[in-house]
Image 1: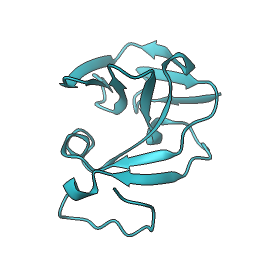
Image 2: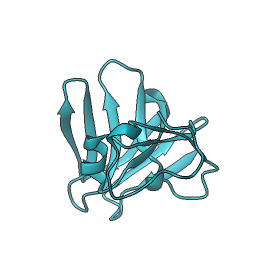
Image 3: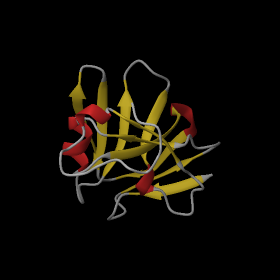
Image 4: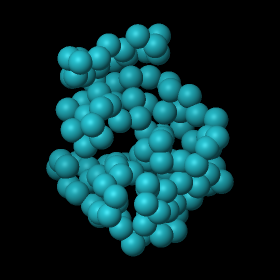
Length: 124
């Protein structure tokens, strides 16, 4: 089991089972919602238990997904695709250590011009 939360603790969660390696997304939406690129793991929806939802808010960011965040501290926590049986969770929201590594970067062509990706992890 892995536990995590937003910054203020108004949203807490637990996951069961293994965490997928983290994926770093450089798309415009992820950069705008996080302030940089967004790194997330993913679990089957049934493996995620939201144990405190006092601050949880959902924003429909596209026709295919919603983003979950804390309405009190503003932490970006979840990305929930409509037609998939999984939930992406901010890698940084987990209490450590997680044992995760970054498996890949995605939407690299859309990355901000203020940084370079030079960690040797595959980029698509």
